[in-house]
Image (cartoon, rainbow, N blue to C red; front, side, top):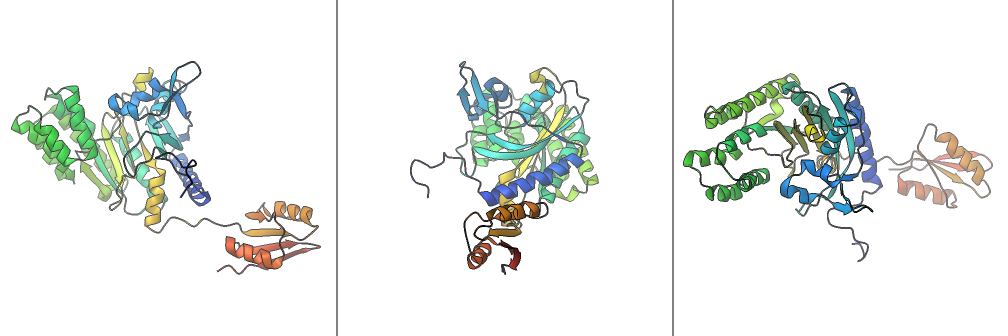
Length: 402
C-alpha cells in the first residue's frame, strides 16, 4: 500500500516495466497490421479546446471531460477519445487528402469515471475510415478489429452488431421530450432492464409503443432477430433501411470468415453521441466488459466544416492485456540475453564489450562491482542465461537459469 500523500488519484495506475513492455509489443504488432490494411498513423494532441472535444460528448456526457484553463482563461480539455480529434484533423489539415482516409492511432484517453472497474486514464488503439460510405466500409473496420484481437492472441472473440438508425426510427414517432429520450437511451446503454422498465412506465405511451421499446434488449441473436425486429418496426422505412444495412454487413463479414462470430443486437447503444448508423462491440464471453467497439459517425466531420461519411473502432489496450492474462497468454517478458560484468580495473573494456554485443543481443552492463559468484547469483535472479566477465580477457559462463 502506498503511503498517504503519494497515492494516485482514483482511476489511474502505474504501468511497471513488464506491463509497459507488453503494451509496447502490442503497439508494434498492431502498427504492422494496420499498415498492411492500408492505414497510416496519426497522433492528435493530448489536449485541445473544450468546445472541440465536447463535440462528441453532448449533454451530460460532456461533464466527463477533464477540463482546465490556459493562461488566457480559455477552457481546455484532455482528449476523451481519438475519434473526435481525428475527425477535426481530417476536416482541416487533411481536408485536401484523397478520400477515403485510413488512419490509425495508439495512445491514452481521459474521462472522469466513478464506476467500479473503469479507469479515468486508459489506452486505446484503433482506426478511422473517413470518406467511405456503405456496408463494405463498416464490414472492413469490424473485420479489422477482430483480426487485431486474433493477432494479439485473444481467443473466443465475438461481435455484436447494432444500428442507431433502428432505435432513432422507433423513437422518432413517439413525441418524447429530449429528456425522456435521453433517459431511455441511458438505460439501454447501461443494459439496465429494471431501469428501462421504470423509465418506460413513466412515459405516456400506448401498449404497442411500450412493447416495442421494451423488446429491444431481447433482440439479440442470429439473423432471425432481424426478422423479429422488422415485425416490431411495423413497416417503418427508416427502421427497415437500418435492418437491411445490418443484414448486408453481416453477409460481408461472412466473406471475411467471421460469420459464426457475429450476432445482431438491436438493443446495442454506444455511449458516444456521434454515431449515426451501424455500431458494434467486440467481446469475449465470461469477461465483464467489451474489449472494444465502434461504428459509423457520418455527421462528426461536418461539425468541423467538412461533411462526409466515416466509420471506425477503438480497442481497450488494458482490457486486451487482462483477457490475455486470463487466457494464459499474457506473454513472457524477456530478460536480457547477456550480463556483462567488469572485473576491477576493466570497466572501460566492459563498456566496449557491451556496446559490441548490443548489435545482436539484449545486453545489461553491470554497474555495481561483483565477482563471479555474485554475477551468477544476480543473473539467476534476473533470468539472464549468459554472463560475460571482462578482465584481462573475456570469459563467458552460463548462469544455469531454470
